[in-house]
Amino acid sequence: MKKNKSARRRKIKVSGSERRLKICAVVISLLFTVLMLYPLVFSISSSMKDNSQIYEIPPRLLPNRANSLTLTIDYTGMDFADEAALKDAVMQDNILAMFGINYKMADQSIMEIHVYATRDGKTIFHSRAHQMKLQMERDYGIYKSSAVKKEVLLHGDRYIRACDSIGYTFRADGIGTDITPAQEPELFNQVSGILAEKYALTGTLTGVSHKVNNLLNLESFKYYLQMPAYIYPESSMIVRFGFMTFVMNSIIVIGFAMISQVILCSICAYVISRLLTRKAGNFVLLFFIGAMMVPFASIMLPQLIMYRQLGAYNNYAALLLPFLYPYGFYVYLYKGFFDQIPSSYFEAASIDGASNLYLYSKICMPLSKPIISLIALQTFIGNWNDFFWAWLVTEDQKLWTLNVALYNISNNMGTKQNAIMGLSVVTIAPVILLSILFSKQLKQSIVASGVKG
Image 1 (cartoon, rainbow, N blue to C red):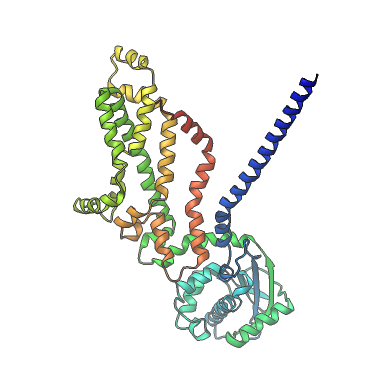
Image 2 (image 1 turned 45 degrees about the vertical axis):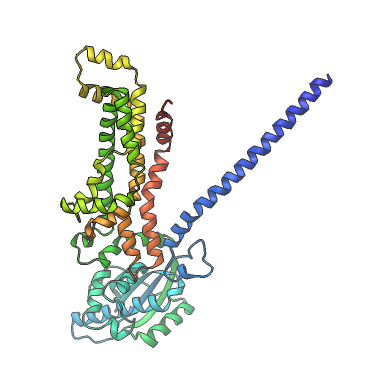
């Protein structure tokens, strides 16, 4: 009895220790998970902040509430020569109001400005601009390197081009939208004071109101993708497709890399595993493994010179040709997997007159799906983040891959930190998404790719 009691006590003590150990393991795992995810969360949060919030000290983790501001300007009782003169006055007031408020009230998280113009009880004009749109016009567009002053904003045809870029609706007989001027006294006094002092309007400001719309923070990403079109207006392709130009370049390069590595590495491994003697196969495999030991820095310059002499510079050939060399580790994985395939499969097919091409395509490759998915995913993740070679061999902006484009955009003097963070999030999102979606396949592939010693 005493022995049974002591055994139960020891069992209880052991189970209690295991429970405490599991609790500690879970707590530590959660702590490190939070620490690892914090940079990503902070990047996403910073990308949704406006230009004033990103420089706050100390920095805040979450962005402020996004405010949408609505202004109503009335032109009743004012004489204009014709409809064109009325439209011109309204467009001038629209630009003065938008850029003036965006500049003077930058610290109030105004992410959107609506301007309505009314006359004789009818709404004749509406224009809407996101804060990032106005900022891009100031940093790279029509008002680049310009002071936000009335005479500068209205100089020449600048205000017309700015209105066309932002977008507006105008009809002298009414645009079909009824707007009731709403006034928030404190906000109205602040806005009217700014406009009266620095940006005097032709019309009469009759209403100022605001509402909170946090979805406007997410809308910033739309303008981050359009930003390259402002920075590189000399490239027609970038002007047309924006940041998606660089995304497509990366997809082309990585798609070619995945296909070439899956096919070429498997062919090399098949030859080593099934067609060469054991000694010859080990020697050839040693060549591929040994090539992995050569630092890229030692072959970078000779490879660049060779590619330039071949005409593979500043074009897609320069980006794609390096992937025609089978990566040694993938050859090693394929060979180890092919060695485990029962020889009876190959003997039976050979007796029926099957060729090596048939054995490779109908036996080896269908059975190698775990290895193929592993190599494809690893090639994608590894080359999605590749920078140096693509930066070295491309000068034309329309050939840049994602990381090269991100590097050059970040070096632009006008690029703000929220835009850099936003584009960084766009760049890493596909890798995170694919890793989550194919995590199960990745685990199975790693297990299936085990090589016998």
